[in-house]
Image 1 (cartoon, helix red, strand yellow):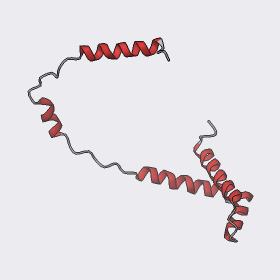
Image 2 (cartoon, rainbow, N blue to C red):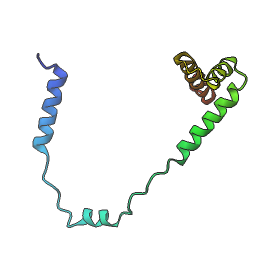
Image 3 (tube, rainbow, N blue to C red):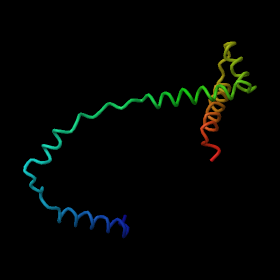
Image 4 (cartoon, rainbow, N blue to C red):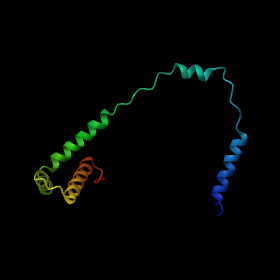
Length: 107
């Protein structure tokens, strides 16, 4: 298998960059001083993600409250009839409602 011209060019460029790379520039400890003075990384909060998820689920439930498919699936599930078809319908309806309410399908 032969290499394409682009692959050969990439390999040549990488080799030239490796060959021309200078040794580390002496900084008299500047980088170490700056890095030691930086604050510790903050822990990121997922609060916004969970709030958005809860809002999306709530909005989807509000939009689907009068949907006959959802009520049929809910009636099946409350009666103990757990079919794969009803689960698939429920998942697809909720995903579609979430995408529609967030504007994903309407762009």
